[in-house]
Amino acid sequence: MMGSLSPMHWIIILVVAALVFGGRGKLSGLMGDAAKGIKAFRDGLKEEDKPAAAVAPTPLPPVAVPEREEIKP
Image (cartoon, rainbow, N blue to C red; front, side, top):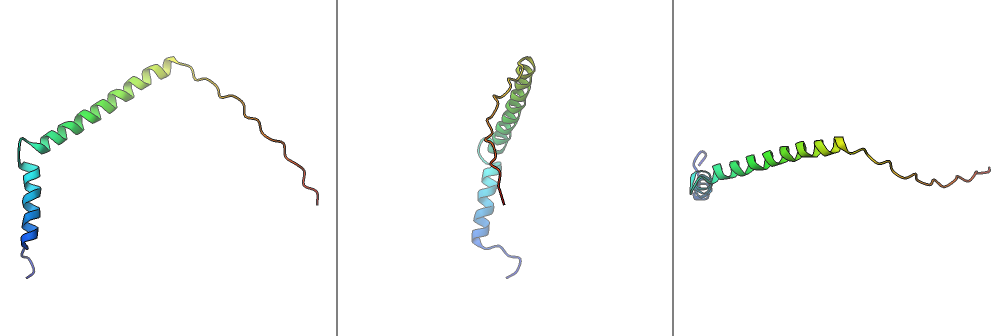
């Protein structure tokens, strides 16, 4: 039976269709939440750039490097 869909396939298709098109625009709600997240991320990047330019970076303290021992043949 090539080409026909089993009852399990129909159930999956109906569930996906219900999630996409059903009940108070769930898909549009998800897209709106994603857009708000992207906007908040961009605003965070803009705010991060402003203080970083005003504050000078502090140098790291020097690190002590142990001396090497000579290897004699």
